[in-house]
Image (cartoon, rainbow, N blue to C red; front, top):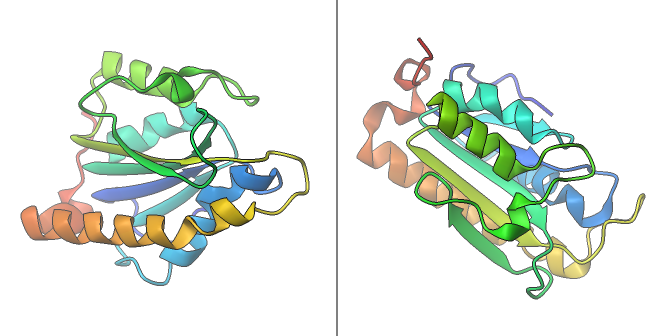
Length: 175
């Protein structure tokens, strides 16, 4: 899912994961609920699992929010907000996914290339299951709305602090 919203957006929300693999669909579920409520200049993108696809989003945004399912041993459905611009990703994000290099590898490459946006946040939702064809577990389904609310609050705070953050003209460009 990539919406017809702004390109070169100041704020981008990316959902990592596969909507056909149980709790891996948390990001897609969040985007579906976020789409009608987010400002139209916020770009919403879904990635089927290739975190390296984030490299373009790094260059195109002032603020990038990632929603992903993780397995770290925490309670299923628990949500962690990780400031990835300020520190290295935790081990739960450092491992490679079944689709190739993990989110941590994409962030490391973006850091080496100097393309990370000033704001890079991951909402990591603890998954219970990844079986093909399974729906979201009840615990992860219950986390969707709280993640949407937190994203909306962060978007509003960024818009208040940096008035051009929501405009396409406010986007950082590679150059």
